[in-house]
Structure formats: C-alpha cells, structure tokens
Length: 417
Image 1 (cartoon, helix red, strand yellow):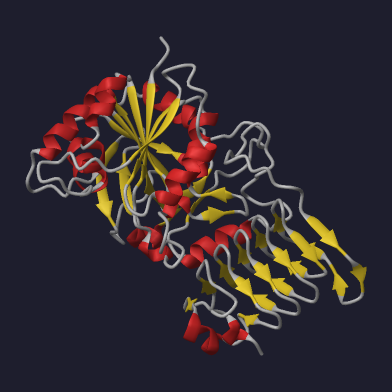
Image 2 (cartoon, rainbow, N blue to C red):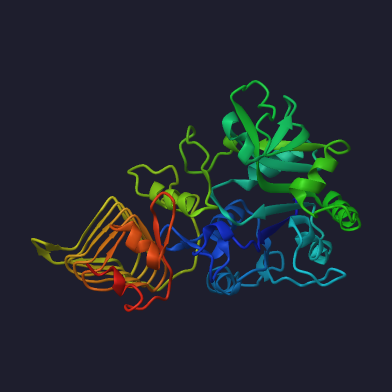
C-alpha cells in the first residue's frame, strides 16, 4: 500500500529572539547562507523525502514569507496530490483568536486534514537549520506500529534544562516528557546524554484528529503538542522517539553526522552561517542527491574585479552569492548575499551581508550582520567601536552588530571615522 502522507509546516512564530532580523519578517523567512531562507530547509526535506502534499501555516509578519513561497515553491498543478499551499491564520476558533499554540494552529485548520484523507500527518516546524530524510522516520513509525513518532536528538545531559526532554524505554517507546528539567533521565545505555524533542511529529491521521478535538474541548489546556497532547498520550497510546542521529542522507558518507541547528538567537544564527565557511562544512550545500531548494533567481554570476595592490577584488574562506560584485574590495570569513557591492579598499570580515547591500570605498565591516539594502558610506566603520555601534544599531552581548535593513547612507553615516 502506498502511504498518503500530508505535511503540515508550522511557520507562524514571531521569532522574537532573532530581533531585529524578525522586525519586518517571520522567522522562517529570515535569509540564510547567502541565497536561502530558513523555511527552505524543512520544505526541501519534505520534497527530497517524496512528500509533496504540504500546507504551510503562517501567522505573524507573513508577507515576506508568502512572497518567497509564491516565487519559489509552486508546483505545476498537474496532480492534486502535489501542492505547497500557504495557509494564513483563519481565526476559526469560537472567539476568533490567533493561534494559541501548536495544537490550536492545527485544530483551526483541521478541515485540511479531513479533506486530504491521509494515512499519516507529518507536523514539522519551520525554524531550524537541518537536513532530514523524513522517509526514514516514516518507515520507523510504520515498523513500530506507532500512533505518534517524535523526532529526538541526543544532547549532552548538562543541556537538559534548555530542552523538552523525552524519557524512553530501550526500545524507543516514550514513557514521559520532561520540560527543561536538569535532572531529566538520560538515554537508555547512554548516561551522558538525553533525548531532546525537535518539535517534529508524525501522527496517524485518526490519532491526530481525535486528539485535536479532545484538546480543543479542554479548557485547562495550553493547546500545545509538547505541553499537552503528547504528555497525555504516552500513557494510553504507542508513542515512540525517532533518533535523529540514525538518519542518513543520500549522497552523504555513511559516517556523516546528522546536522541540526537551532537558530533561535542572533548568536546562534551567526554561528550557523559561519559553519558554512569551513573547508568541509558539516552542512553540505553541494550534495546533488539532496539539494537545498529555493527561489530560482535570474542572477548573473558573482564577479571579482581589479588586480592591483590595495585594489584587488577577492574573497577568502567565504560564501559569495549570485550577482555580487567585489570591485577591488576584500571579503574574508564571511557569507555574502545576492547583489552585494564591495567597493575598492573596503574590507568585510567575519560578517553576514544580506541582499542588495552596498559597502562603500575603504569601509570596514567586522563581526556584523547587515540586513537587506543597507548602504555603508565611504570610509564607514561597523564592528570596530561597539560603544559607538550601540548608539545606532543592535549589538549582542557577544559583540555582533546587527544593522537593520532599508537603511539609507544617512542612517549609518555616524559610523564614518
């Protein structure tokens, strides 16, 4: 029997810890790795795994996300079972509210599950950087004859207080959930690590429909899968943990470690981008058997011009996206987005530069994130005087300077030295 799997992507979170990158966009729409968006990872995982029926539930600041989905994630419409459809918040609750939790988000769109009539429903978040062969998780779910399977990643026990931790039997069956408990039980046979929930679930369709109806009727519920539905299910249903580290991606070496990063903060987002600069990065964007899909941009190739002393366009240990022109400037240890201009004598180091930025002559940018359309004026300086930067920009405790998008030359002119 060919299983019918319906994918539902939860893409409505505010992403407040990623401010100011989420000031005007939803977290899943935040750019990553030069040319991608965070949501591209979960959608690519679904498509590469052979799951082509996908609803994307949106909510806060969704315009940028909706535009990205319309430009880059539309099928031809030949088969009704192949679609990626964004679903704005419908306010179908009795009091017409925004989504009150992850379970409420699905419940308010329960008609989509009923109409699709799938065997399984894969409910995944859209705010992590990872690759996952979801077909392997589906196979595990079926082999265990589970009602629910929860993707889990082993983390060091000392980090238990930062995650929702899953307690399992040796066969993987979940017996209890521990929310940010430093004394949570470790993985059977592994005293140094605990299972952290990744917030990705596979439900049998009858189970999720029943549980959503019951949860919606429970006035004491917070209407969240991790807090309410799953903890109540473990005592009366077969709920299993799927070890994400056992997941294998086609085209990768058999001993390659599964890659997953939580980019919930500016520092985490910065480090995940910086991972890409490595000679052999843990996240391989060049695997043709598991492509990371996104909008198909009609960009020209990146270009490096001039070969003169103190005026040589070059990039070292960096990722450079299409349409970018290094006109005598130097980029080192950085990730550069689309259509960026780095002018003569400019230096960009250890930074993330998003689309359409302009780095003026002899300007210096260090340990910074420049959102889209920022113009750094001639002889400007960002990241060299953090006290001065704090007067104009957002600066993290670790010293990463974030310059908001759509800033004019006047806005950053105070950085001139």
